[in-house]
Image 1 (spheres, rainbow, N blue to C red):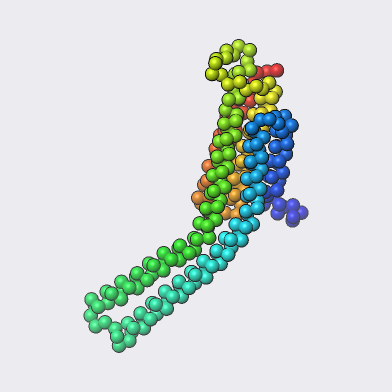
Image 2: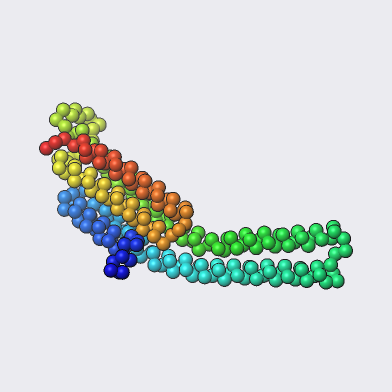
Length: 239
């Protein structure tokens, strides 16, 4: 029971990969010559990249985090040593005699604290920024793929299947029957859903606000495109 509960705590890449591959086989069975099958193959490849790069990325981020925390400790120790030496001089015989002579010492201490704070912030956030670059690159590819899927369904207009539809010289021919168009649009909607799942996989190991916001953007995009597809399906003429 513990293992079963743990498996529901997160989205795993293997089931997503299997679902994408199954969808590709379903598309190949009905539309072997259509470009939509190649899009499914590309999506399967992207999910595989997300799965394979996850462990490598986590390892690099872990090593970068250890190194950055060590450097942060060095900066903190160095700053404390510098402030301690300055304080020792202040309480020694070398202390300034007038108030104006204290200003350079105060300015130096403030500058040390500011630079130390900036260095600590940069080093502390370095691992997350390294992770962000790789993940955003994958999310950009997934967003582009969502638009490619939308281009494949764009000319699949249910109105063209109605008996009273009047074609023009510029009308696109979907070359699909009513049932074929329904299956085609369904496949596009399923693929968009899987694009959203692949985007969610990218954020499984991230708490970065930019990454999470980009994932949310991809999910909103795929949801909106899928909604438009289902509007087309609802307009398909009755058989």
